[in-house]
Image 1: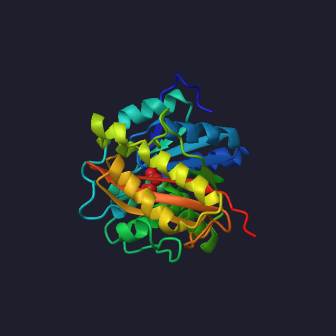
Image 2: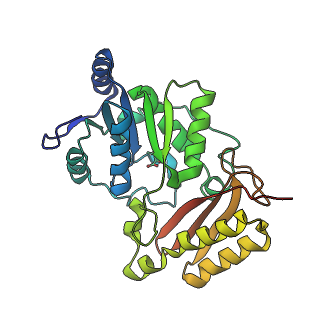
Length: 291
Ligand code: PAF
């Protein structure tokens, strides 16, 4: 682990990254990668801390990936604050920051796209066409560039986590994928770099997403069917102040198949719009006991 007062080492190309990781692995050290798009918050830092408990060295990548943003999305205004992020990473003892430029990740002539069927479909995949291709492509590249033993992702992006697990399994990428529980503010709002888009008034509405998901998940786990429970939950979100709900659905936790009731471990997932922000969240739904 890096001494927390030492400035953080930063590399910007694959060969420097690989040289550092190779040297650690030659010494028998286990290496973890935490991929991010920067604008780091406590949720990211807790991923780093968790990675430190599972590995000897932790690399964090910061790359705002253009391929996972749609043409009308927030790529150009997505918060970029590398110096602040590097200081935060140094303070928690991260060993290395990998911060490639777009040209390093996607050099002229780049023509490969990783597309995952099944788990990518519906939910955010329906509302953000091409988003999960962009995620799958960049995460595959990051894993092959860093060649870590372990890579960690937050469970807030539950569908993304299942997409990444599928890619790693399907392409035999030799890395362990570890999902970590969502970090929340005191009022339950899931930590997200995009929370910065919320006005003070919107911020006071935002925790309703987690509250309504949790209440609905409890009803589902008690044996209720999705109809009309999910419609009522969407109406409750709008009544709480959200402008619209992109989706609120019960899916199987692992392969994201739609479920009409909680007959096996599920996940209740939602995305809803509030001002400039589109908030996503999800909660576990325990399997109900049916006669
Ligand atoms: O979750 C994110 O921050 C991004 O989607 C990821 C996994 C770093 C890929 O760009």
